[in-house]
Image (tube, rainbow, N blue to C red; front, side, top):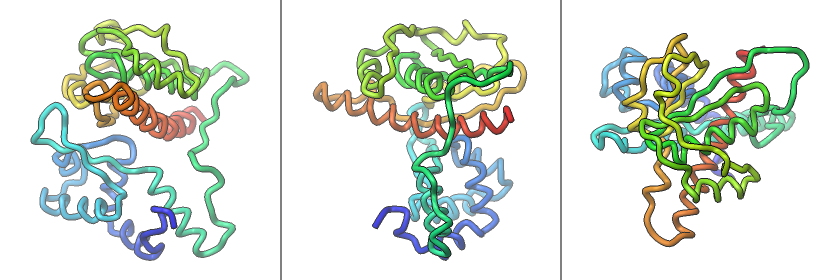
Amino acid sequence: MTAATLIQPASFLKLLAHELRWRLVEALARSDRRVQELVALVGEPHNLVSYHLRQLRDQALVTERRSAADGRDVYYRLDLDRLKGLYCAAGESLHPGISATSDHPHASGGSETGVRRRTRVLFLCTHNSARSQMAEAILRHLGGNKVEVYSAGTVATRVHPLAIAAMTDKGIDISGQSSKHMDEFSGQAFGYVITVCDNASEACPVFPGAPERIHWSIPDPSAVEGTEETKLRAFRTASDDLMTRIRYLLVLIERQRA
């Protein structure tokens, strides 16, 4: 039995049928958020929002992670893969013809005919050495000529060797990428500005053109201690997380381009 089927379809649908829980899921569908951000978005009291977040956490639809920037804050994340699995399981329980057609959201890369403006995306983290570098490469790899993608940091350092190794495992070469300071992109317009570490989220500058601001609270793999294999495993975990999130991001990008 898969994790997606541990909750009965009727219970799952009832869980999301509650208006406030649905609004919380909507708010988390694109970006990780702190509870105070959710309170402001849904316009409900803190204790009520916390109660319904707990209902979603109990079914593993929402996870929480303490902020690396301020330990008093907690970021909430919606598990889109689990949500998709539960929706498909609910449909299949009604009729076997209602089921998933693939394990991941479809976001085709490659070339397109005709001339269309590429969606510009900027990934930001603190040192532009690991998470944002991997995110840049994954989106460029999956998005093809649909995207124009960059990454930068609040401090420019180097591309971490274990980030290069983790991406090599995925068949993506980032050895030619370089670390850049976010000031290099000051004044440029982007469709999406995505922070992949908590410190960068709170230090993110304002970019022209009102880009969509998204935050992904991803643990810093370079902070993991232990053997070389333990450290590499942390980078692989981060790259897997980014791969999943970016597949869903590409669905949004493609629909906005349609």
